[in-house]
Amino acid sequence: MGIQKNKYNYLFKNMIPNSIEGIKIYGSKDQYIKPQYYDDVTNLENRIWSELYQKLEFLLDQYASKEYLLGLRTLPIPNNMFPNFKLISPLIENATGWTLLSVAGFLDEDLFFEINKQRRFPVTDIIRKSPRFDEKYSGVNILNKKGYTPEPDIFHDIQGHIPFLMNNKYADFMYEIGVLGFEIIKDERKLGKDLIYHNLKRLQNFAWWTYEYGLLDNKGLTDSFRRVDNDIKFEVYGSGIISSYDEVKNIIECSKGLSNRSKFLKYDIEEVILTCFDYSHIQDRYYIIDSMESLYSSFRENIELFYFEG
Image (cartoon, rainbow, N blue to C red; front, top):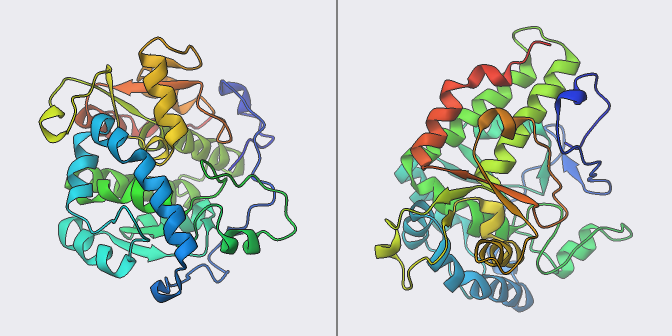
């Protein structure tokens, strides 16, 4: 959901006219379920996965949060070939009640939140820079680089998000976000179209600056799970960062004073929900939470912020 004309837009900061023009978006009336045919994965696709994973593997071991590291170590997510959804999904279901749903691509908000409130996480088996991706967007001019693609791919979905769903507290948090998004869209409070859009944008901003691009204060407690101690002030828990080598390197360089490209801000939920973002470039800011527990509490204690009434 990009920025649309809306009478409540004046409340937002950092307004950026980004667009997902050209990206295929699937709704409930489309053939959005697309099973993974694991035997059809090609050597080229396995090689792309390997290159992406192995380039990040040791950086994430040093800088990712404990929740991510522990989840990753309990799942059959290989570093040299495509992951098999059928092997991963039962383990997550046994741990937290979530399952994987293999989908065709980017889902609209209605469908995404409806799926999440059923404790199902949508994943796609297409990967950036693959012939299948090029075929899907034949004749459409979209950005498709090894480090970035404008729609979620298997590397972002599986390597970035799924390890967290092995953690019960995180899994409950994601479920509650899905329930909230679904309730906003259904508009049981009769707020109307403009406020539905506005409140969804608040929730999207919250998701972006937390579970997609959030950082955590490094208290040194995760180092016992690492090969090499974390030498910066932060841990990474945002899945959008975790699946992007360039984003991880940017955080390391900025935190060490080697770059001033991005700033680090203390998390404030009221600021976060009203701050828009640009998903086509390295982030210009990151919000730092004190702990995962403080994030969960902040969300639950401030639910009414997502029901702005004008």
